[in-house]
Length: 383
Ligand code: OGA
Ligand code: NI
Image 1 (cartoon, rainbow, N blue to C red):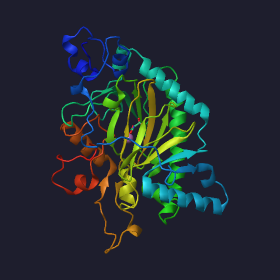
Image 2: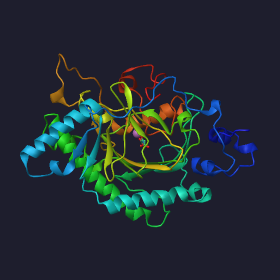
Image 3: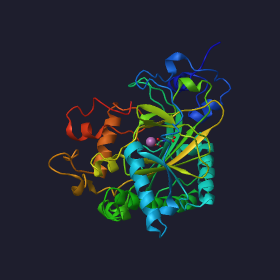
Image 4: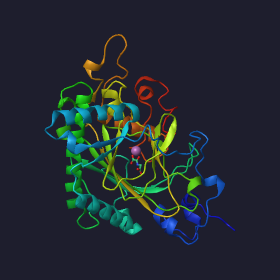
């Protein structure tokens, strides 16, 4: 039987009768899509491994945010040391009792479902022309450089310090304003605990990173079910820029984080957020805290939607390792200072040069290479 691959279809778009099928979603819904040929699949040759379930002795950290804001100093210091361990050992944690109302989370999932359900013609309006446009949607796949084919529909929107939002579906702007505000508040609360966990004043990171003007970017993804999920990858391994990425999903799992040399599956907990610590927390902490590698796999049954909000410093802030965490001997500064916006532009230029795999903002080259090395374009740890 002839097989049709979603990526191949995208490449062959001009000479097929499926000219109008452009997104991963519509491709998955196409009745002609039967299986994925081998030339069109994710190869595990570099990452090489199946994911495992978390160990009982080394379970995924769960942070109860309500204890962090409780007046009880004992409770607070327990959570702070829990946070330190999570950031140091994993670079990842789940957060419960976070104060973001369930109704706002549901409304976001509904809005994004509605957005991805818009017709291709309607979505055209939000495609964006340049990778740094404040609103941009599309289908992400890459075939040419890393031999990794990923497929997902995505929407990227810059929501702070200046708020942007697609005009469809109706009501999106109100829902996104409320939700992104609530998540910013959560991020700032977590950063207080993280500051303390580094032995700094609770407000240190907030002030040093000018969080009143923090750059917050929505990165939503839709991964349709896939007939041969074991052969493809929703989002290839990468780490996120910024301080904290806070992710909501529609109850369907698929995220895996790299921990102790293995890919670990993250089973969803209802109403909990997933939190990755990003590259700029790694820089600030002079490498004490991780910037975790993660990836998303797809399944053959249900559509997964993930709604990430990346919370970074203000674009003009120069990020360097915190002075107190650096000395001239054992803890030399591992990174030079760079403005957050310059970092993002540099990262984009790498993507635009065709040396990186996906659609830009979330792909993270190794910082030391990015900042120190002349082989800037050659190596990219994301793959
Ligand atoms: C991201 C990301 C993975 C997911 O948006 O940075 O890694 O959970 N998403 O789908
Ligand atoms: Ni990511």
